[in-house]
Length: 333
Image (cartoon, rainbow, N blue to C red):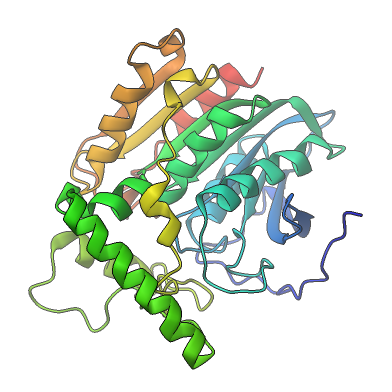
């Protein structure tokens, strides 16, 4: 028996972006195959008829639907798509009995469950469904596209490969067997401490206060998550972060293994000034290497944009929404 949990959902508009008068917004819930009920914001374009193309959106990793994913979803709904921005399992308003855990498998399933929901919605054409993943959910979106044949088009924006960064560190600076062994040993020790203490230790969100000598990418995150620009009380990154052991399994589970077998269209977007740009450049190279399906894959580099500029535009309209609209119109037809 498939059952939905009754979630407590906020009724007021509590997003980090203004509400549009060009869309209709509602709160919805749906269930993934692990029985976890997910909370989402559904955005419908006004004054439309018939079944429409649809897009599921999530990310960044550690954010909530009231932040970037909701902005992407609402903007794409203004452009004629049914859109669904959801909180992943164990975060935000979504279910999951243990909070602030992540899983390459379950989080990929979250995207697939969103496609399930859209496929069965009366206003959606199930043959015209795409997905958008932001930051760590960009990698998750590519993994989902490699698994879910219903997806016709995928956008990965300012992408992180969370398995790579957990296994090798930032900029691959801890890419050795010894470094991975020590990371795994620390996680295993933390598991026992958590059980002794009866609760999971939180790893902390974006550092606050910001050290004067913090690397630029940390300052970049702080400028979004810890200020009025993007702070949200339910966001892990804005507050106390994931559990220390929350991303343990990512160390050993590369999610982009079969990306060069994706038959549907994929667009990767990244700023050339982003610390994370190497993720998209390498993912694109791997995606087209020895692939029969390279013709509908594209890497778009945004000059002058840093990582979080593709969260909300960075005050310079850095998100190429015209490109996104044209991409989805081409492949969701």
